Amino acid sequence: MSTAVNPASVVRRASAVNPAWRYGRPALVLLLAGLAVGVPLWLVAVTSAKPQAEAITPNLDLPRHWQQGSNYEEAVSQGEMLHGFLNSLLVVVPSVALVLILGAGAAWVFARRKSKLVSAAYALCISGLLLPPAVITIVMELRQLGLAGTRPGMIAVYTGMYLSTSIFFMTGFIRAVPVELEEAARMDGASPLRIFRQIILPLLRPVIATATIMVTLYAWSDIFYAFFVLGGGERATLPLNLYKVASAQLYLNNWHLVFAYVVVMSLPMVAIFLVAQRKIVSGITSGAVK
Image 1 (tube, rainbow, N blue to C red):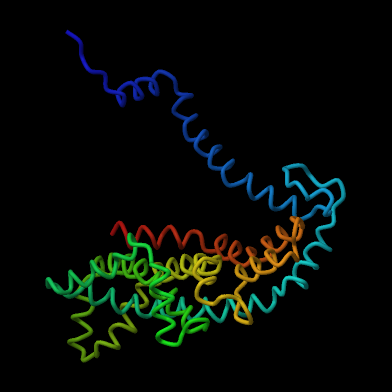
Image 2 (tube, rainbow, N blue to C red):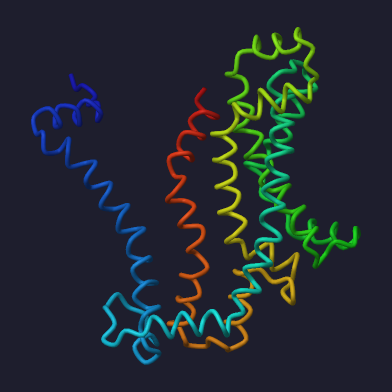
């Protein structure tokens, strides 16, 4: 009589017999992840420091002649990076603020109210995590409202796109907060607004930090929706400005300048991520696990 072989048991026996396999698997995973992330980063970094003759065909070789200083200076000046940086700030900062304020308020209601209507509203709000936004519908609605090609229209799009993520994490976190804290504040005569401001918001700091970083990273590097909503011009953000100057033959075959632009554009987000990466992990676990 033949017996079925359980693959999991085979792996466990192999790990017990060969300790190197147990420690080799994490190392293999880290190596593959490092290659998947490190190789593109290395390509961008070394190409941004090469002369144009060496950068015509991007490769992983080190530059024979380093000229990163002139490349970055030319990318900043010709690529209108300061103007694009200001436009990105004027769009991303209000979007993040609205996502946090509206998300925290809605999450508090969803976490504390128990009814079928509230549950249906919560399911509808977090459906944005699964359903991609329809860009044609968005553009048509913005045109009818007179917001197409404007910063308020772009802010509204980003707020609607990332509000689901904020509500999802914050609702899970607030559900783990004891209700007795709010009840004690009500007995002391605190209004709902004061409870929300002095109790709920301070407790939401890890999740707020996570939502801030995630929304900022997504909105800062977005070019797809910015292309359809803003359409370039004086309101072009950094990614949209990069696309504009590249397609206008300013950087045609000048990969050293294109990659230099990418490096400078990514530096603020890389710095934010490195500083706050622990808050990202703690906020995600607090909102999704608790």
